[in-house]
Length: 387
Image (cartoon, rainbow, N blue to C red):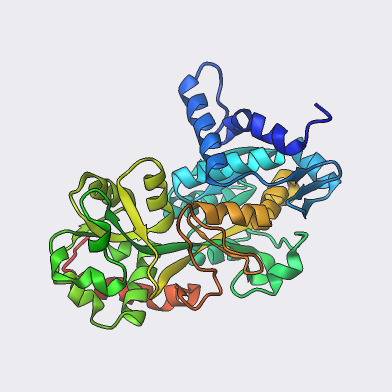
């Protein structure tokens, strides 16, 4: 195969490489093998593979991601990755990384709160296996830094570019913003005609949506807490009250909300962009809207652990995450890339703003620390929600 370009080799073997994305898939577990192969196929479908040159290190679409020594060491290693990202997104990301680098991933996914407990517990007992941790709560990333879980990592080939960007490098390189979650709204495309669909945030307040909207409660996580802050700060102090007057159905999780929208139990509602796009790609009759009057954003953080500091594969995973290829793949899934020196890749037919665009309103870690409890408490009161 030496005369076959690496790009085509990667495309031909992506299904094989993806088999370890959620642990090893053996011949005795055909279901796991099929799921991994499907994740690999979807990962390729979401975004065209980059041009790959691994003749002297790893170069993706013309950008150096790893020198020869790091790449060779990484391919003899594996990434142990703990993540609080959504399950489907995590599987796709692992599959894509394996296809582009030839390095295996052992991935463990759980909600950020439980993940935080596990990481701190393992680290306290001196048994931390994760080389890389991705978490959706910036305060937890801070806690992992204070707890000596994260270690300073400033060896990426594009380190200077990252350090020159706003809100990307934290605690002198102990952890980084990997990408941002985006929150907007969506509707059931079978039950709602395009001309009747909401186009701006104010449209969700129309009386025609009474008893037909779905929202996730503000205490369910950082993304919806950030959305609540966005609504109050940028759409008007009375936005919550006007929305509450329409008697929306309140959900505990986005996944259950999306299922209800797909079944027509609700016709429209606020929506996490990545998860909703994934549902649409899977065939659910949901349609996203990118409103001109702003989108709510929240941080996803990632760091190299003290265990990972000894792992070439973990370091390569860090490099890949902030490479143009890694950032583009995150954007193609429905996230907003952390890097602002590259264009924001479209998410299918949708074009999200760049992180530096004024229309992208990010809920900062400081706001989460100082305002979070108050926001949730007042939101619960406004919506008469007891949890």
